[in-house]
Structures are given as C-alpha cells and as structure tokens.
Length: 166
Ligand code: GDP
Ligand code: MG
Image (cartoon, rainbow, N blue to C red; front, side, top):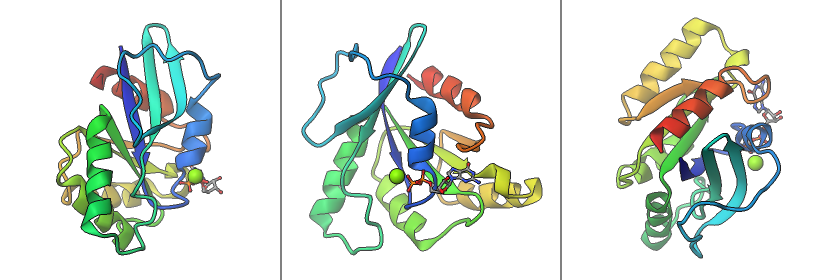
C-alpha cells in the first residue's frame, strides 16, 4: 500500500516534530503517482509493504493572512492531489481562528481528513475530550487521533490508521 499525505495546521502545533519522529531514511519513491509541481515531497515512511509519502502543500501555512480566492483555490487543489490530509491541532490551545480558516478551506476538499490532536501529554484527559468534541462539530473527520509527537504516544496507532486508509 502507498499513498500521499499532507500535514496542515497552525504554526507550532508539532508538524515538524511529528515528521521527524515518523520519517526514517529517505528512500526511492515506489508510488506510481507523479509528483506535481504544486506539491513537494518532504519525506517518506516505509514499513513492510506500506509506503507513506509526506507532501508539503502550499498556500495554507499563512492562515493569518487574508488570502485571495486564487490562493485558496491552489491550496484546495493541492489537498485534492494527496490521498489523505492530516489536520494537526494543539490539544493545549483548542479551537482557534487559524483553525477556522483551515476548516473553511477543507469544506471543498474531497479527500479524507484525519484530525490529529497533538501534545496530549500536556492536557488532562477530560480536557482532551472537550477539545475533541469541539472540533468534531466543525468538520466530518474520517478519524480523530490524539497523539504526542514529542513522546510518541499513539503514533504507531496513527501510522496503522493511515496505512489502512490507503
Ligand atoms: P510546527 O511549527 O507545527 O512544525 O511545530 P514544531 O514541530 O516545530 O513544534 C513546536 C513546539 O512544540 C516545539 O517546541 C516542540 O518540541 C513542541 N512539541 C511538538 N510536539 C509536542 C508534543 O507532543 N508534546 C509537547 N509537550 N510538545 C510538543
Ligand atoms: Mg515546522
């Protein structure tokens, strides 16, 4: 199984920490899907017969700025060129305006979206449940997965769910 994955989310939610934890050595791309000019390969995860290619998609890293409809369009198209979108949020901060921007954009994305609630090591379980319930009302996520990218909690489970999605 193989597929392309994009990780989106506000700055400092833990995207790079997650990538560093998951990505081993970069190896040859086995996927038959061509890399598009819009999207850059960031890293590849391989295990047994599974390969997940992480893609850096443009246009959604500056949710603070008011983007024109053209930029939003480019971002939406990029999301539709991957097989799975990971929308990462910070469990400690909860729903914010930057998240709202991203969720509005995701409304036009046809691909499955996982909500990754990162930094679970920093919140009480009751608080985590509240945050998850808040996000759940905003979008129809294919999966909601709390993790700690820093400590590694539940990351193996997330990898399993991603492979299953391919
Ligand atoms: P990015 O901007 O989304 O790429 O976020 P980074 O990966 O650079 O992480 C921002 C900060 O959050 C860094 O100081 C990380 O060490 C910290 N961080 C990332 N993941 C976790 C986590 O699961 N738990 C805790 N406590 N801190 C984390
Ligand atoms: Mg980063």
